Image 1 (spheres, rainbow, N blue to C red):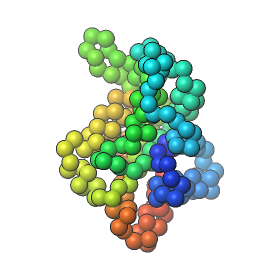
Image 2 (cartoon, helix red, strand yellow):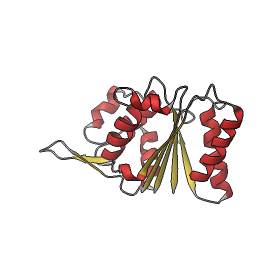
Image 3 (spheres, rainbow, N blue to C red):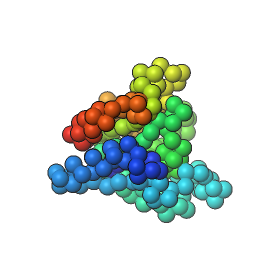
Length: 193
C-alpha cells in the first residue's frame, strides 16, 4: 500500500496539483493508496503537556496519531509532498515526525549506546517530493541541507527507511517557471510514483 503524506495548507498550490496528479494516476491504475493530509485532518504539530507525559513511553493520547500509525503499518511505500520553507520542512511535517514516529513504533533506542534502530522496515521505498522558489542545487549547498542530510539521511534512515530506497525529487523555482514546465513535471511525476 502506498501512503502519501501531504503537507500544504492551500488547495490552489502547486503541491496540491502534484498530489492530484499522483492520486489520479493511482486511481486510473487501480493501485491501492491512502493519503495523510495533515492540514485537512487538522493535525496539531505542537506537543501538549499531556502528550509529553506519554512521549518517553512511546505512547500518545492523540487518536489521530494512532490512526496515522495504523496507516503506516499498512504501508510498503511512502511518498512525502511538501514545500521547502526557510530551507527546511514545514513545521506541520516536522510535527508529524515528532509526534507519530514514537519509540517502540518507529524506532527503538539502544540504552547503552543511544543509537537508534528503525522499525518501519515494512516500507521498502520512499519518495520525497518538494517544491521551492529556489534551485535544488542552492538548497543542497546551504549549510546542513535540511532535506537530504537531515530529513533523508538521518531522520528517515533512523526510522528504518534506508537511503538507497529513498529518492528526492525537487521542483525548483515554482513561482518563476512556465506553465508548460509545471504541466510537464506533473505528467512526469505521476509516471514515477
